[in-house]
Length: 283
Image (cartoon, rainbow, N blue to C red; front, side):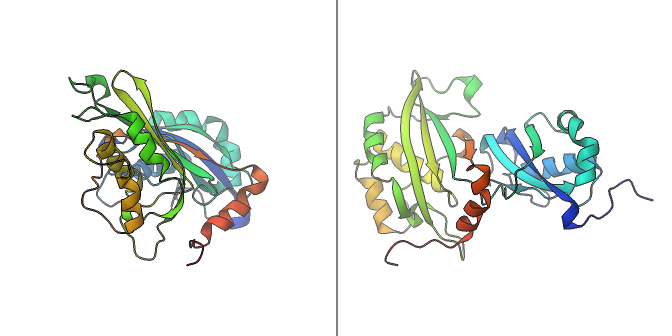
């Protein structure tokens, strides 16, 4: 005898969308890793326990690195239709009772047809927060704000950022992965003042390659404190190779704020387009 749900055919499965938030400080990133505490691991264990379901496997919209936070993470999970009918109304509250305090499922429910958390997004939006306060970061913000010891000039940073917008090969700002393209469309990159000496850099793209956000932020901080000219980040981009002078900033200042999906009628089409390998015009 077993307390877990029996195997179910694909025709009897229902896709659920989960909206998730977490403090990434004590996690080794999103992705499940043997012997390490991960967001995916905690969520899958909680879902397996609450639903009494073997082989729980989440597909995520944005694979965050160790130490990176999220307010707007999204994932999907396929479950038996009858299981959702029996447990759906109480699933969110039951998950809240078993999950650790540093990860929350904010909403869960049936996903529209064609929804794929990984391949359907129009864009992901991250925000990196940094302080140049002479006395350092507010101790209550030390887990999500980087302290930069030199004063920053946001006007210089925004002029440099504007030169990076558009579709490019971001190999110079990415850790290369075998077989993966580094062509991305950078939709937004700008800095605003949130409070005295507290700045937020928004980085928005259709997708990101590994370390891309933190490398871009590092390049712009070098411009903001005067170590580099405003043209330097664009020059690095054009070189197409990693530059040791580009500092990849620590992860704790970074938060995944939003994953935007298209209208329901466009979900499947968007997923199919995303799966195609991208090349730049003329290549």
